[in-house]
Every structure is written in structure tokens, then in C-alpha cells.
Figure 1 (cartoon, one colour):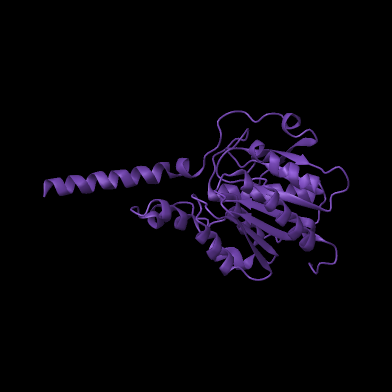
Figure 2 (cartoon, one colour; figure 1 turned 120 degrees about the vertical axis):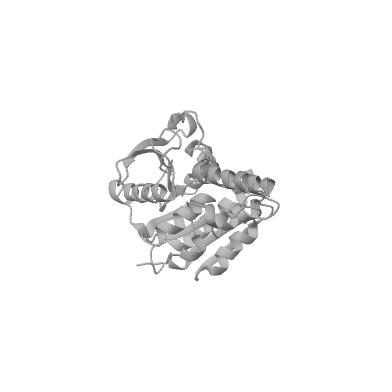
Length: 275
């Protein structure tokens, strides 16, 4: 009986430790400084904006060579900082789109600690910068969410409907992804941040494009597909053959960029029926 009680005590201690440190396992910011924007993207401008709870977030705004026909707000995944998304921004700018790259609280050179509630405030501030200080109409703005950032974008779109939503490697919910990687843990009981995109996706009210890697080892393509199936029309599904989660093809590959630009030209064009 005593060994059994000891085993139960160890298991409970392990679960308690996971409860305490779980956000350090979910959010993986790079712990070195972000380089100056012009060192990474020659035409980028350093920008700052404030969240509703008083944090100042840093970002880069990239304007195309001519007049932009739309603006893309990028919602990063759970690792790295905005500098890692520079190839994506550069490719979109070459297609005539303005791009806002920015970091969540606790990422890059930003203060604070990330959480689902905190990222919600950060997302509001980022889009508020584009529509407020830069004067862009939401109908000409697209949200681009990558992995965890896809969940942030979906949540925001239910409250602030953009002209279009692009989700790259999105998951149905954080619990579903965690369960796929840790089937031996009671993840639904443990998770403090849940990002239940599948419960929110029908409320985005905007044209949707989902891009998934065929061999994604972090967010299984079936999780992205489940989210797609739950979404309302109009929607479009694109699979990138042979691509894993962090492959270049899913960062700024020509196939993915081509699909995104084509989709946004249809969704953000004047007279597209958006109101």
C-alpha cells in the first residue's frame, strides 16, 4: 500500500509542477534582442503601440514600393520574434501589400508575460494601430495567423471582423494538440490557456484561407482540417506537399505566397461585397 501511495504522491507532484510551469512550455520567446528593422528589412519602419492594460509593444511596419492595395497583420506562432517572419513580410510587400510584424508581450524586446488573455489584448492593440494611427479600413485588412497565432487571429476576428483571414498550420484547440503529443496526460484538466478555435471559427464572418503542411509534425494536418470543416463559407483549403511545421515552404514558400496573394486579391478588392 505504501508504494502505491508514494506513486500517487509523485504523480500529483508532477502534475502540480506542470500546472505551474506550463506557460513556459507553451510560449517560447527568443531571449536575445531584436535587430533594428532596417538591418533586416531595408524599407521597414519601427513602430510602437500600447495595449489596453498599459504595455508598449514594438513592431515593424513595411510599406510596398507603391500604394498598398491591402494590409496584412501577422500574428506570430509561439516561438521566436518578428525578425524570423521577415521573409514572409518581404514576399507580401513585393506583391503590393503593407505588412505589420510585431511581437506579443514577453517576446522580442517587449515587457510582460504571455498568456491567452494577454495575447488577446496585444492583438487588439496591433489592429488598433493599423486602423487608428495608419487609418486603414478593416475591410482592407487581413489577419495572418501562424500556428498559435492562428488561434489569436480567430479570436480577434470574432470581435473585429477583417476583410479576410489566413491561417497557416492552425489547430482546432490547444488541448487537441497537447493531447496528440502527450496522450498520457490529462491535458484538458491541466491547461490554463485553451485557445478553442474550433468553438470560435464560425463567428469570424470573413473569407477564410487555411494553409497546412502535409507532414506537419507539430500541428497535425488533421487538426487544421477539423478547423476548416467547422468554418463557414467562403473558405479555401490549401495543402503544401511534403512540408513540415517549420519548413521554409510554410514560412515564405512561393506556393504558399501565391495562394495567399491570390486569395487576398479576391477578398480585399473594392466591391468584393464586404460591408
